[in-house]
Image (cartoon, rainbow, N blue to C red; front, top):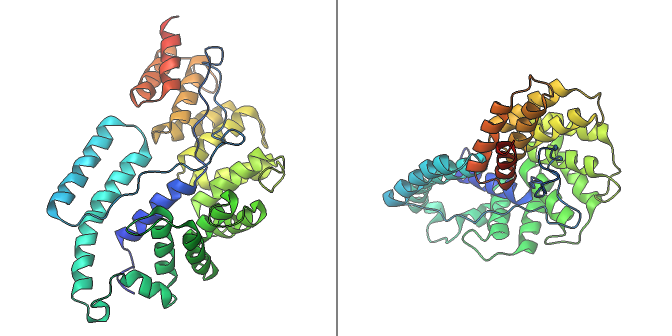
Length: 323
């Protein structure tokens, strides 16, 4: 049981699955007529997927794997402003070292001798963390066959024991109809359980749910509730929630319109590498909303966003350069 506590493997799986099940979709590409207008909050278009999958990682064990993982960190930091990619590379490197230690500990443990998957044994014995991790293995195909139904079953067991990460991801399974019948109401119920215990991913998803509204996601449009959940997630550092909160203040949705607060939250999102936050911050400087107008600063921000690989940033930079 102690092998799971504070394990980087556990942290990595939580991070990877959070990327699968978060509603952090980027804004749709802007036409020339829309460039330098404000981007909407990061809500996916109707009918589009709200998965944002990353390639499953393997579990490295050797010194060479550790060196490659550490090199990936440097490459991610050099090539992107996206905080998710940098964090993933960092977890990969940490995992390489932790996995080597864990593998050695398991190899010398008589309890798990000759057992191919000791994690699943712990899960069968009722360990909630192990159940969550086994579910994640089936969901992502990490060292096992990808099987959404088995992932759902394990996460349901873990969630029922109070594992917050399992509750959040079980909500995603119901919401998407992955491994089970689609049920927005049940999805929201599990997100609420996790969100009320501080799960930032579930808080953000509830914000989007109430922001989008129209009953599409099993909840009516309620800007005040959306604002409340975005605020909670933003206070925990969720960049997309910070951008969306800025959008709520800019548009006056569920709150009195306030350009200075919009600027503040866009800036926080932008500082974390959030492309929508960067584009919106650039537009604030360009228009002089909530800050002294500064077209040179706007151009600098758009250029940085473009260098990070964001097409909207490139389009904004090009248009501003033509003035």
